[in-house]
Length: 265
Image 1 (cartoon, one colour):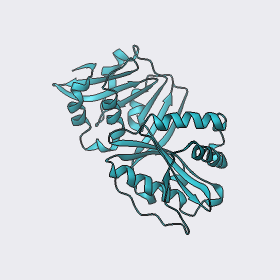
Image 2: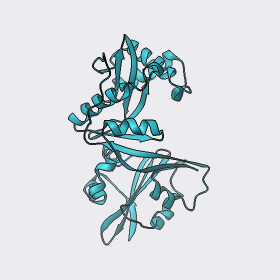
Image 3: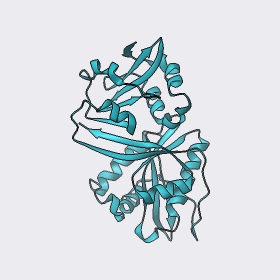
Image 4: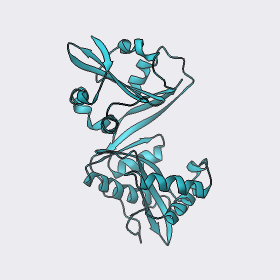
């Protein structure tokens, strides 16, 4: 048994390690492949037993993620943890608790991870228009004001022009997208992708204007976005804590995977 740094040549063994759970964590596997298992701030380690990979540890910038398909003491990694730089540990709740048992932690948050493999048709709001992808800076200004209209985004940092500049640069330099629904001449709901990769995309920024809630607007946007991603061969993944959001995601076709914990050191 031993621990060593993994390279792109180990990818087949990593896929074998995840096995039937590979689809549940495709966003993580895509990230490994996207970064080529290499980089000063992207290091991947594997634990081997009898010549087979039995667990994995990813140090991605300031984050640490541990994966093992079965209950297994992560003791083999203790010798290298002191050489790594990280401020938080994230992953499936049961695994984070295993790897953090000897750490002095400051706080911890628990959310849930879900994914979509098949879209369920939404209840369509009356007078709806087809959802569209943001393709102009003026639409980003509308999107900024939509976010500010919702209490859950009241802490949005920066001014409007700063937001437009940051988001425009992100959208033109990556596969990420923002989809929105317009009703009565107003942008009333939206959802974004983040870290789009070859076979996965994280969903973020799901928002509905307070005047248009409980009318199926968010579900309409999500159904269109999920369908678009799935047709491109990408699974959508969501992290959520809000029961109302969970209900919307389930109606749109989300399957729940596991509790997801982030623990800060």
